Length: 286
Image 1 (cartoon, rainbow, N blue to C red):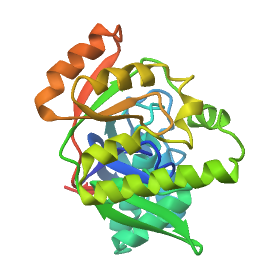
Image 2 (spheres, rainbow, N blue to C red):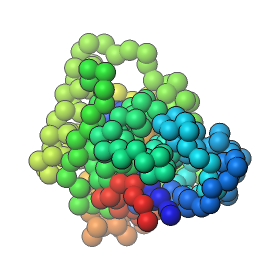
Image 3 (cartoon, helix red, strand yellow):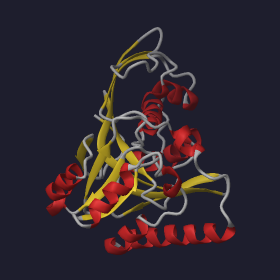
């Protein structure tokens, strides 16, 4: 048995901790034989290889009496790069508990459990549902709504350096003024409306008008402004900081992908560029 879990790209500018999109990078978990103790084989550096691994730890929080298994884990998702690697691990653990524990969880139940573990739904919800998802916490529970799939390539510029989410959150202000909060929320609300209306010209402008986090984090990821400026004249609908960064994501018209990538290189940025797509399907079993 095998679990496939997509990566995710969160925030899309003003949708801070609320909007995310599943993307075509995958965490793959081969579920092998039962064992005396949990064994997790992987080539992902010094991550735990026992019950402390985030996949197993998440599964055991949902189903503490789950029988130990031998797992083989592979991942295309860069760690500490704003592409939802921890959320994919959490969702993988929930899928493991659901299937092996016979829990028969509905998608909304998986979102609730994953959001409780992660703290917010922006990465876990699209990882579960696929596509583009908007979510929040309300009245003590989490809720999420699936949006239309944007018809663009997702071009990720992935800097060689890591950026811990905790470090990226440390540069954010503890509070915003009422006036700034109203404007930031208005931008986010209108961006969501434009995405649902599939008015991507308006959506793109609004995605680049965030007031919640990018203006503070851009000093940690100087590539954001460079790529955003390149995109304005080379076919990008919008460029935003993926999650907490440092990955910079651009929604690019498929006809302009080569031109856009060439322009990024000409701007002097030499780190990895990946052409990705929106993953229409969330986590699933093979």
